[in-house]
Length: 336
View 1 (cartoon, rainbow, N blue to C red):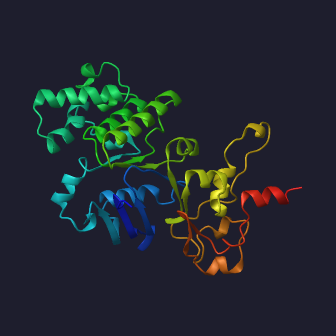
View 2 (spheres, rainbow, N blue to C red; view 1 turned 135 degrees about the horizontal axis):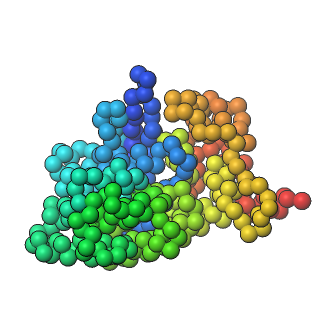
View 3 (cartoon, rainbow, N blue to C red; view 1 turned 120 degrees about the vertical axis):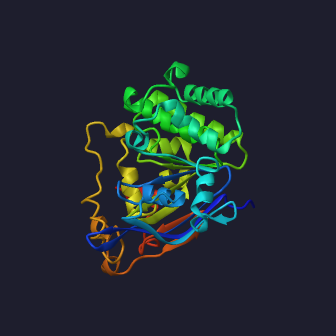
């Protein structure tokens, strides 16, 4: 069996909020295998982006800090690397597509210079070769007349076009691990499909590479991902193959997410909604972080944090009631 490309072990990241430590990433552990397309899903504030930024060591300090844990990539713990070595890893070995293109792009540098930066830093190419590489990757992500737009600035691009520039910046050095944080949010469905196909093609071109896709769009997960991690309250709540997550979700939170997807026979019916709201980061209950919104809550759920239980076959779930949770098949049999 091949070794994981990335191992995240007991990762803890907090932010100082009102004089207290707010744990946005609390004991997160998972592996990413070579050739894998891993999805991470959950509501806003569940810890998805903080986990990704922690892997890249891009947590703003202050107010945030990676407190403990390991992020092992290619046999090295990235959290222990000197900053100059970590800079060599970013862009070349691990690249990230950021969620907010307008705030991630430098407004005073033209697009060509920003996309070319990674090539100049990591690869020994001539200026002409670098320019041609930039034009090629910009065309791949769907920017028309790419050669004529190299001297344009971010404000001259639409939101969708800026998102494509961010994707080009991440893909240009063909990294071994790509972390994509909501990479297709500002794109229409046609371009979204093209970008996902491009990401998959580039992964296939580099043997042993992998992708982490962070998204709210469960349809994108169903189409693209091999395995899914469900996060809530800074913790992993469920891990399973994409097939198992969609056919037989186990955690009540995962069931709620799946239940909110519109179905063919749901026309004219109200969509299912998980009750309540995500608690403020300093107000999570001492027990299960989902207990304030769970319809199956018991007394111990409010006081005891459930462990993440390995069920075998690549499945894991964090719930006291895991042995009592009905499968989809049992639920259908019990229905009148």
